[in-house]
Length: 76
Image 1 (cartoon, one colour):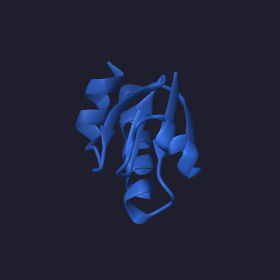
Image 2 (cartoon, one colour):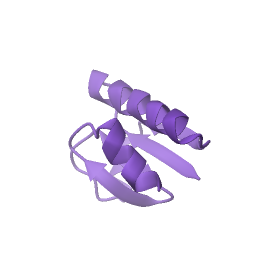
Image 3 (cartoon, one colour):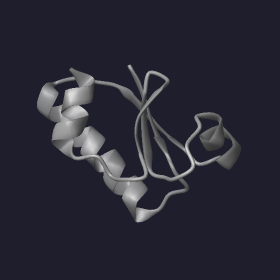
Image 4 (cartoon, helix red, strand yellow):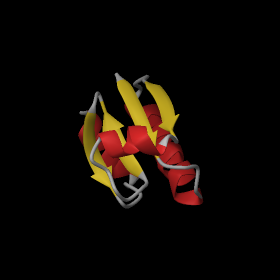
């Protein structure tokens, strides 16, 4: 499973990554988490507002920090 956090490194982007890590831990799952900071790459997903959460190439959330419970729902 590949998870990407789209954003330039703002506090909301870091919180999104923390929530992803917490959700994975609670579910006992592992994933490759990367941060995409390149604006062209972010725009390539059709995302105009960050942070955004992408799981296996599909944008799940954009423009807000998803909760741990929301991320767990996306992962199951």
